[in-house]
Amino acid sequence: MALQIVLLIAGLALLIAGAEWLVGGASSLARKFRISDLTIGLTVVAFGTSAPELVVNLFASATDHQDIFFGNILGSNNFNLFIILGIAGVLLPLKVQASTVYKEIPMSLAALVVFYLMVHISSPKGEMMLGRIDGIILLGLFVLFQFYIYRQIKDYTPEETIQKPSGPLFKMIVLIILGLAGLIIGGRLVLDNAVIIAKAMGVSEKVIGLTIIAAGTSLPELATSVVAAFRKNADIAVGNIVGSNLFNLLLIGGTVSLVSPVKYSPIFDIDFYILAAGTVVLFINLTAWRKHRLDRWEAAVLLTSYIGYTIYLISRQG
Image 1 (spheres, rainbow, N blue to C red):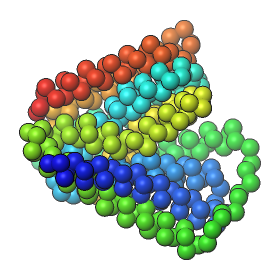
Image 2: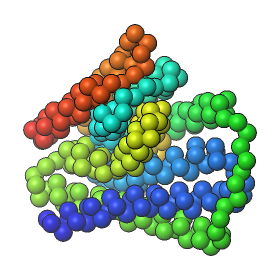
Image 3: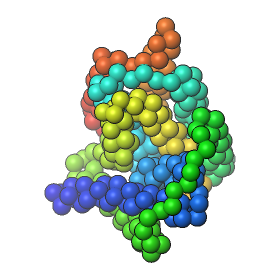
Image 4: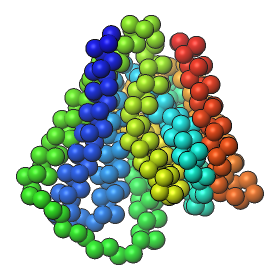
């Protein structure tokens, strides 16, 4: 099993490196065609940070490891909320913009409710699943969210000067190809070896998806929020987490279910409830006395809660 652990770590490293290469190459290529940084940020970079989850979940759905798909989405969102926000908040008390508190966080909760209702509405065959129509709806909501973000940024961003990229076109194309290859190979390594490790340890695919794979594919978000906290940029630290959770539910959930409908197991209901409760508590905490602030002790509570949640997952084993 030691070899599988090494290959799993290598796969996660390839996923992250592949996303970096893809973003770098695609961003330079976009600038070459005079596409603005604003548009690049909303499309290429945003996709890049979500690419590891997307690739792993496409493989999981295509190879009938559907518990890993739901485990990864819900596990990543819980990891983002409790661990990443917790670490960022311990490093820096987070003062958050009102628009994030009153708009983006409720949007994240609304997306979760929509996703939950979709998987609990039975298909004509009587199965709980995320089907192609659900995928179209989720992707439609994702487009609306992107339009909202575009308007928000455009309203507060001065007209920018588009910088010419440095380097030849060939280098940009090579980066894009390397990025795609890294994502594909890394995604396959992560999925295959996670399944082998789960079977060897007697751990269910649900638990592997909710913990190891979820944490591994959330590393780009962890790095972004920790760096933002060190730089005392609370808005990026929190916005990255809220945005990532919306991307996971709408873009990844929509894309995967559109490509291949995914059966849902009610065993994940508790993970939905924990994510919803955490989001609601975060919203109430940030709006109480209109403080719009997450203090260090509150962030520590988030971290402690996740430890308890992980212990529960391992003991649940079902």
